[in-house]
Every structure is written in structure tokens, then in C-alpha cells.
Length: 256
Image 1 (tube, rainbow, N blue to C red):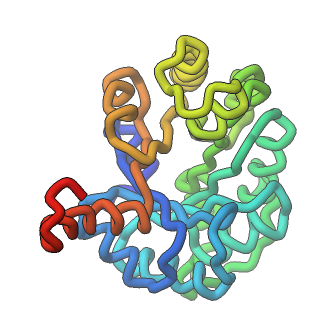
Image 2 (spheres, helix red, strand yellow; image 1 turned 30 degrees about the vertical axis):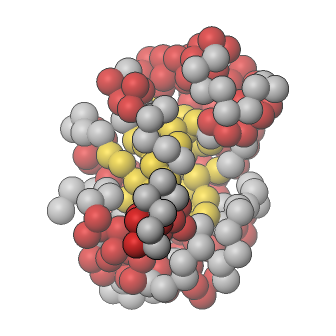
């Protein structure tokens, strides 16, 4: 089975969703069966315990479903902990500088790219005996590191951020970005369109990837043909609410 990064390198578009609420490991299988290519567990806004995230990632690994984690902030213990659980990669929220990006690489990549601690009898190796140097080279290559761009500052430094070796994706957070620009939710505003285009161009020029996370499909669809290759739609609780929207008809309220 191809890794998520291999699929990106092959030019595929991949689509994921955000896990924000449901703690059952079964969420990995459910999302895979729904057709998603990956998911991200939200440990920035979500209230997950360490063990809950570990269980979700373990189930995902067992079925070959890429599971990434959005860490709360750029701290070594956050980055290392989730990588040791076997996460396929990390999303760093509100990245605004190359320094933050370099710290992310340093904590998650083995030497010579970074200084990730070497402990190989862990979930990330499926507790198997591995050839250390070979495994570490493969892990460095396959781990996906995403910098979430959510502000003017982040857009202004996108080229420097994506210049950092080991960073793979400039990933747009549209809600926070439009909030920072003072135009919350106005995804078609010329300033926001220009910001998106700058991020896509910076990624393309460096052989890297761009994408975004939208709660609704409509604002994402136009960008799928404009160079955004790794994207996310909705969330676990959002999809539940979307599926339950037909309850009004059962209560005799067709317009509910």
C-alpha cells in the first residue's frame, strides 16, 4: 500500500477530515470506509487524552489509514509524543515563521535532518525489531509535516517556511485567516484569494504541496483544480450533523 506521501508525489489529490470529538478507535475504520484518504486528530481544539489519541492511531495503523495529529503548539513534548504513537505526520497550527518550521522538523525527524530521540521499540515501529538506520531513513522520508497558515504573518513568510527542509505542506486555515484579515468567512475576498494563490505558488516552486480545510464543500471545490493537492472537508461531528439533517422530514418538518 502506498503511503500518503507517495500518493502526493504521484500527483494524486487526497482528501481527509478532522477528528474533533469522537474518541472511539473505530472512527479510523468508519472514515476509511466513507472514502477518506486520511484524517487529522485535533489536539489543538479537541479534548482528547493521550491514551485516546494513541488508541485511535493504533487502529488506523492496523488498517493502513494515515492518521496525523494537529498539535496544540510547537513544543518538543507534543511533537515527539504523537510521533512515538505512530502518527503519519503532524500539523502545526498558526505557523508564522521559518523558526517554528525548523523546530517542527528538529523534533520529528531523525538525524541528519533533526534530533528526534531514538527509541525504536514503540508503537511507531509496531513493536517490531527493525534495522535502525534503515527505519530512520524511511521514517524521515514518509513522515508528513504540515505548517498551517492562518494569518497575514504566515502568508508573508510562506516562502521562508516552505524553504525549510522537511516541511512538506503549506496548509491553509481559512477561518482563522479570514478572521485575521478582518473579513471572517469571506473566502472569495480578493485578499484571501491572493493569499491562497501565493501559498500554492510557493509550494509548487519548491516541489511541495498546498491544501486547505473547509467545513463546507462549496468553497473548497474551486481550489481543487488550482493546485491544492492535500485537502480536508468537514469533521467527525460535522459529518454526523450533516447526516442527521434529514430528521426534520421524519418529524413532518420538511424544511428543517
